[in-house]
Length: 321
Image: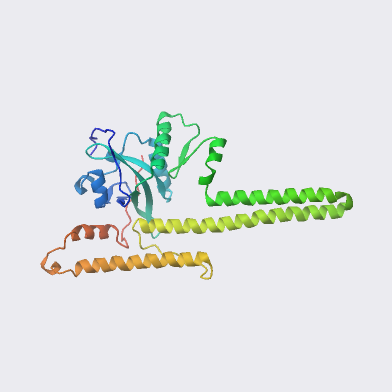
């Protein structure tokens, strides 16, 4: 598996509807690859099961990207970024990959990777960033959970639209507080001649308290909203990774956040029911009692086994040297 085929520049472009799925155990060994992944990569199940992803690594991918990936998922976080992989018989393909630790009963049992087609703009951005990382001339550019973060103040300002919702809400809260403080200070300066020392101190205290209240309210709202979005994102990534055994705690049923939690949990339960129905349908299919299998049933059985709802034994942790 380590005798890499020659890499050439022929690119295989994913179709819009293709979804490539693999699962690895906690040591990074492949335990499942769906038919779409096999078709795109050119490998067979026999080539991949029990092996690592190193054979598919393209030399254009910098080591910093994989360091960031492992650092992120070993902290229990998801990694999402653009990856360039080699194909078995030469050539390469780009994918937007989301790699998620599958957590059951508080233990990471494996990792699931879901790949879809990236946009051409995403490919060009990643290609330029990876070229800089390989050369060592980064100009402060770095990776964080797959995100390409520019270096320098001007570059960060240009990247402002991509900042997190919490960061933007805190910035607006700070700006609102500053504007309130500036307007109140200007008005207080004009009234200073008509106020004695005690009244001036009281007005200044009220002004400072108002500015603090505006910022504190914005901070609390940003914290609540970003926390909910993070919970919903982690939950949906677990679902996308095939872990249907992770329940979502209910929220306040009278507001939008509670409605979102209810809808997500209802989706999970519906998928659990569908998976059990499919599994039962295979078992009850005509001919199974005579040892016959419907077309594709063995592959589907294997997929269900890999994506089963519960595990009795967690997989061992990945060894690091």
